[in-house]
Length: 66
Image (cartoon, rainbow, N blue to C red; front, side, top):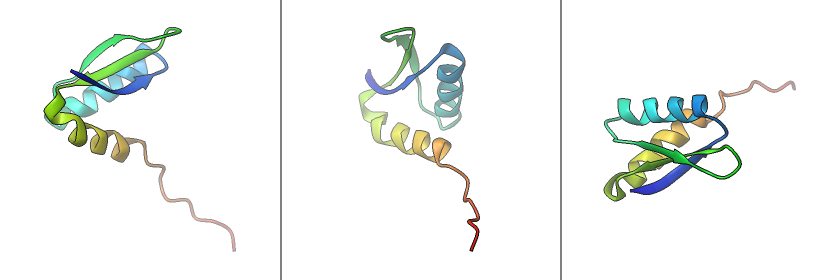
């Protein structure tokens, strides 16, 4: 298993784990430093997992003022 993300708390980690699982990627949670939670996936799923996490965390397009 390869670590692909670190969440600030269990709730955030479970959200990421759920998104990865919905993408068909097995994800395991582990203890990180200072109450953080690590998210790990199988080595052959790292790139796909990173893409799924990036897609999840991209901010919505913001319409700027002229």
